[in-house]
Length: 103
Image (cartoon, rainbow, N blue to C red; front, side, top):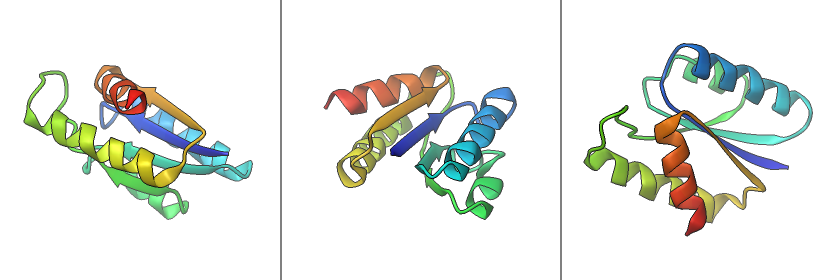
């Protein structure tokens, strides 16, 4: 199964949960791509585990133009990736994921 995991905020419990979940899914044979901010805490660990990481310009709680760029980036990932599941963690990632998946 091909799974796209999106998350925001870039550190703390959500980020650690996504890291553990993605590593566990990968160990069970799933193809996981994780999308989060370029400076996200688990990025190096995910890439070190062989998990594809897509940097997204998510700006945090306050909406701004970077959210439109993130929406386009996730849309491109969905078009190119043929994902079976899109799983979003956090408000901003949830909004971007839902809007992108609807298209």
